[in-house]
Image 1 (cartoon, rainbow, N blue to C red):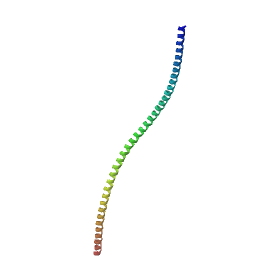
Image 2 (cartoon, rainbow, N blue to C red; image 1 turned 90 degrees about the vertical axis):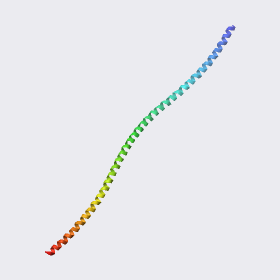
Image 3 (spheres, one colour; image 1 turned 135 degrees about the vertical axis):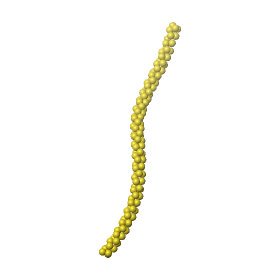
Image 4 (cartoon, helix red, strand yellow; image 1 turned 45 degrees about the horizontal axis):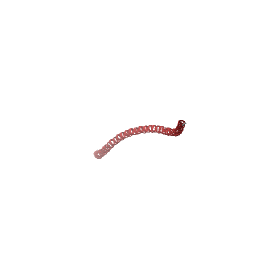
Length: 134
């Protein structure tokens, strides 16, 4: 009877221990469920952030392409600006030399006109003299 009582007491203690363990297991299971929910939520957030990163990478790639295109266009415009500046400088030199030549030609023309006018006057005087003699 003692052995039975002892075994019954031990069985009762085991049952109580099993109930405690069952309760701890249920609590641990509930904690695992909460942890899994948190992990799922964080995984969803990670997925959302990865999509956002991919989108931003795509936008960044487009921006870099635009920047490269703008830089290329800028280089072309700088080269064209240099060409135009050189052409302008050459035209300015040509204009200045042409203006100088024009002034020289005007002066030569004025001297020649003056000389021809003097010669014409002399010819007229000579003609008058010849007319008088006739």
